[in-house]
Length: 588
Ligand SMILES: Nc1ncnc2c1ncn2[C@@H]1O[C@H](COP(=O)(O)OP(=O)(O)OP(=O)(O)O)[C@@H](O)[C@H]1O
Image (cartoon, rainbow, N blue to C red):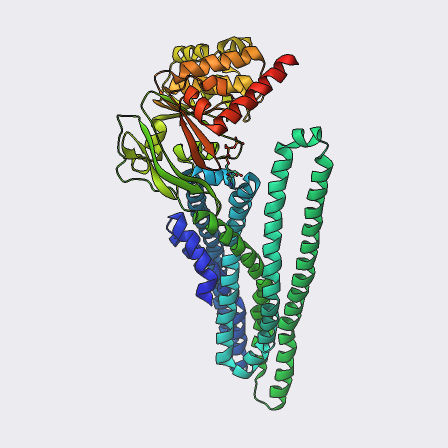
């Protein structure tokens, strides 16, 4: 039972990779502090007992000596208690923070090593809730609950054993209602855990919804859907409130009942005392001892249910964090292989996110220094294919090779040395334009950065910004237009100068001049590299060395533009659809 209780804590300590000795020492000292808290009562009892027994023979000098001994003992106990208290709190707190810091690092490492696709899959709000709030709850049980529970139960046990030695009947009377109180608490445990689990899920859902709401507020407002979203959020808030009320009402009631029953132990003690005094089985000194110590035994038990509740609640957090830590990581080679040839080959690759197959038996080769375009209707699996090439996910079947070496033997870090990506959604980070362009090339000089920006048609708009290249842009690239962000990401890739380029052609509507500039910048970027590109505008890939036509996750055509236009039905349809679109646009 105890092992089951503390197994999650053992897991946290294990994952933290930190030595828990300091934390254990702290807990032991806090237990000792609780016991020292009782010693004055025993000292008083022993003194009374001494005087009571020697009442007729004791002279004044002996009385004073005994009093001095008592005072010195009390001072010593007090000093020891203070030392235990100070070092107990210090060590248990420092030890706890030490463990939790290691655990946090482990979680961050896990997120860092998780396949990027998995991180995209998890809702940012939920992930944030888990790594902030749930870790904080775990911190709370290390700093408070564990020491509180252990010191309270150990102190009570020690006192009980001492009292048993004095008079077992009185000691038993004191704790007789305790089993009933524990049974009641156990009965509500199942319900409470269910409710607290629901509460945690609701919290995570609300965090996810809030993040989505804030990030998508522009779209929601434009489509007059913010009301709908707010109603959705309100509904979740009401559910959370109801859940909270149930937890408080039920849990609070059970805790009150527990306290009442525990305190009933004092009544049982008095009844038993009355009986034993009548039967002349207890001395007035025993009576004194039990009155002094009795409530001290019960007192720590009164706060126990609250500590246990917080403990159980936080253990639920550990379960969520464990799920995160259990997410399978990409296999990384012991000795990553280097590559000198950049021909990409996919051999019978199949992939599914869940059950439904998304890519089936995909095989093709992209010879070094050539451009392969991927085309196909929406949902045919183009982005997924690019995600596999970037190792955001791993295929369930088949192999992806570069220069004849499987990408899992090259390792993710090695792979990213050879790879640049320009996606539709450009991720910029908080920092200056220089920092953003040079993110993949930390040793680049200012001249090289500006050169890349010139080739990517960025220098004009950068020079027009108030602080030029030192202008700080927000996390989402706020302050820059979609076309400008796209060109920054092209400059980034140019500067990195990686031999392989994965490209998701932008469909975002930018003005014709920006479109032309982006196209030119992309052509320069593609020169001399091995390029795999998702093409949305077929006229931009007419001269591609190879075009792969995807439909429902399968290759249904492969060749050059003119061949496919003659022989491939789907390609013909896509081409015609775009030609009509073009004509309509021109007419307008
Ligand atoms: N993270 C995900 N989890 C589950 N299913 C996904 C995920 N991403 C995409 N899918 C599904 O996989 C299929 C292929 O999606 P994918 O984005 O690769 O298509 P696409 O050809 O790039 O589409 P588009 O041209 O519209 O961008 C779709 O049915 C999509 O719903």
